Every structure is written in structure tokens, then in C-alpha cells.
Length: 425
Ligand code: SAM
Ligand code: SF4
Figure 1 (spheres, protein in one colour):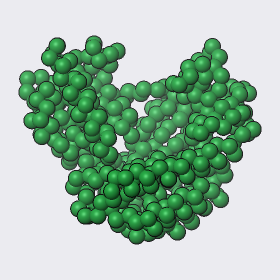
Figure 2 (cartoon, protein in one colour):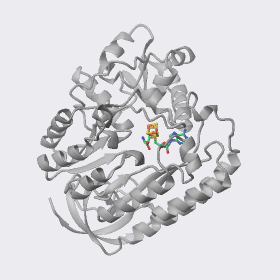
Figure 3 (cartoon, helix red, strand yellow):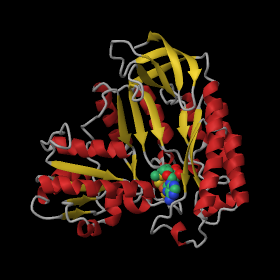
């Protein structure tokens, strides 16, 4: 989502006649896009800003800070960091060119959260073969630990026509995979008339773009229903992967998190997904050390994780985020306990990922090549429909964005190795 935010900013600037500099040294403006969901990203920003201070002393360069931390800190950032010229919030991306111009002679802060205009969407794509498309902006679920509703505003869905038009533009521009984005794709247009239009969107995309892979993230367990599961199962283009954040396995903690489902409801939906969508991979987010989490609560998280057999998991230590409901609960878990629980949880999730990858050995599958492997440029990196990372030996021809059939020969801890059988398309 953050990468796509960057594309939207680059698209708006390109439309106003700007162009992307090859390096920081050549740039006359540097834009830092921030995230404040967890503390570590916040700390990285302040480190980066400190190093840009000396660059600015050496030559005139505009420094802009945008995104959700900018939204949260606003004016204060301009006072604390006098070398920052512009602070712009999460709904100001379409105005970026005008804002940079306004910041020519004076510091500017633009963090208004009202009156978001979706516009025609991004014109800039980092990659030709895949595109990211926002279907909902913002979130109003107010999970008690989460800062997102405060910095991205209430949930607003784009119309089906708008989304389909944008997909059509990307597909005619060479995209073979589209990624639908929203904090909660399952509630796409849910709140306006009480029913979700997400299944309808999946069906329309399958009909209009029968050769385009469709991925989507993130799905909220509370709003995942039988109709959505049915639409994923039936659609030939929707990829067999769902990211369905569980967060915790204890009903007491789930209620305190304001997640809107119980562990048993989650497990039932996970089982339905596995039963109805053949070969689906199920991935998740998990938080340890939520205020008041007991050893018994944590044991329940371990049980549910094991029961769901997640194919891959992102594990986080709870961070208190100022302004959220959970930040007001006075029952912090000591750092050492959180760390120790995280390690136990990671041991389990790593084991489950290993089991899941080992199941793929010997299978022939189709993958989309995403480019040379970053770790080992002698190999291609690709993704299967169910979102596994697959590496195979690189030949001279550029296969980026091509569909290939491979046979899985080796299962590692996070990815698979394969041999190329044929280029399909
Ligand atoms: N909208 C998605 C959902 O409902 O699952 C996820 C969005 S959130 C930006 C991404 C993940 O960050 C969450 O699923 C959660 O696990 C984690 N997260 C959010 N706030 C956190 C916090 N205060 N401490 C630790 N992890 C957090
Ligand atoms: Fe945050 Fe919850 Fe909204 Fe996800 S659904 S963005 S975790 S408030």
C-alpha cells in the first residue's frame, strides 16, 4: 500500500511535468513517504531526516515528508525539523505539485483529511507487468491498537466503474496482474447499502479481463462471508491466496482489540476457505503482548495458529500508538515477556511455513516472473498464483512479467526452487 502511495505521488508529479531523478544527488526535491503503524518505521524516518540535514547544508534541495506519520505529527514536524520544507498528509497526494511550489519560499503543512478526490488514479507504474489499484481508502474499524483510522480517515469505496476503468487502462498498458488494495477489501461498498460489492467486483473483473491475475489485500475476518469465499472459488482470475489477519487467538484479547470475531469463527472461515478454494494459501498477521495478554491468552494464539496451519505469517510485538484506545489501557506486558512470546510464536510459524512449502515439492505449477532475484541475480524470482516465491535459473532472455510453467525441486524456509519447463505466455 505504501509503495502504491509512492506511485500515486510520482504519477501526480509526472502529470505536472516533473521527472524522477536517477539518484538522491541529482534530485532537486526529496520526498520521504512515512508509516506510523509501528514504532520502528517512525524511528527510521527521524534517522533519515538527520542525514538529509547535511545534504541540505551542501546544496539547495527541497525536503518533503508525506504519508501517515506526516498526517499524525503535522506542524510539529516543521518546528522540530526546520530543514523540512513540506509536510503533507495521506489525502494530499494529488496536490503534491502545487504544494511543492508553495513550499518554495516558506514551510508548508497540508494535512487536511476532508475532501479527498480520487481522480483518475496513478499514471506512474514502477513495473509494467503488475499494477496496484486502490479500491477503498481509509478505515473506520478502530481496532483498539491501530493508528490507521486516525491518519487515513474514514473508509470510502471507489465505484466499480472507476475501478474497472483503471484496470482497463493498466491491462491495455501491459499489466498481467492487478492487486486490489484496501485496509479491508471485504467491506468494499459494504457500508452504504449493507452488502458487500466485492464478490461482484471479482466477477466483473474475471469476465472483462479473463487473462489477468487478480490479487487483493487485506481481507478482514469479520467481513469475510460465504458469498465472498464463493466468488474467490468460482473466479478463474482471482488468485488462490488470502491474507486474513488473525491478530490473536484468545477471545478475550480479540474483544479488547475490537476485532469483531471470535477465534472459533475465524477457524471456521479458514476451514471453509481451505475446503472451497482448492490450493488456497492462507497468510496472516499476529500481534503478541497486547496489554493484559496472559500466558493463557498467548497459549490460545499458539493453538489457533497451529489449527489454521498458516502458509506464512507476519508476527509483531504490540507497540502502543498514541491516541488509540489500547494506549489508554494500563496493563503493559514487560518487554522481555513480549520478546520471549514472539520467539516462541515465530518458531511455530516458521515450522508451519516449512511444512507448507515442502508440500509443493515435485508439483508442476504456473508462475509469473517478477524479475531477477535480489539475493542471487543468476536466478529469476517468480510468484505462484498462491503467492509463493519461486526461484529458477536465469537465461539470457528477459522473462520479467512472463508466465512460466515450472517444477518445484527444492523447498527452503521462505521460498521454493524450481526448474523451468516452458514459457507459457
Ligand atoms: N487492515 C489490515 C487488517 O485489518 O488486518 C491491516 C492493516 S495494519 C496497517 C497491518 C498490521 O500491522 C496489522 O494487521 C497488525 O498486525 C499490525 N499492527 C497494527 N497496529 C499495530 C500495533 N500498534 N502494534 C503492533 N502491530 C500492529
Ligand atoms: Fe487498523 Fe483494524 Fe482498520 Fe486494519 S481493520 S487498518 S487493523 S483499524
